[in-house]
View (tube, rainbow, N blue to C red):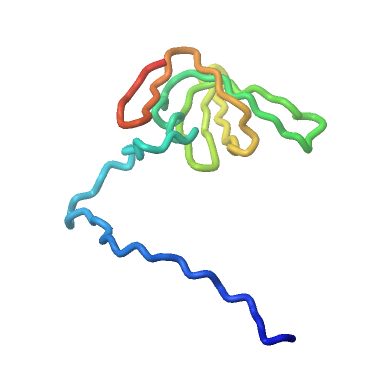
Length: 118
């Protein structure tokens, strides 16, 4: 060896204090970060609406492509829960398999601090 080595890079630190909410001020669980337009946030804004969720399971020969129809019950970072009132079935769908969602009515969409309907 020639005495040279790789040195870990140094990154500037943020010295700006992070604002905290006062004690006892608990925000609502349904509050969404308005500046983020992630699919789970859009699905949460449309909770209770009828949808068709188009899903692909690439490793399955039996269920390669499937459509789940029902009402959005919940949505998280990695999952979507749909209930089908006609059959009584509930579906937990992993987001990695979700291709797209078709809404049966106008959707609520929030981006750039303003709520929009499409």
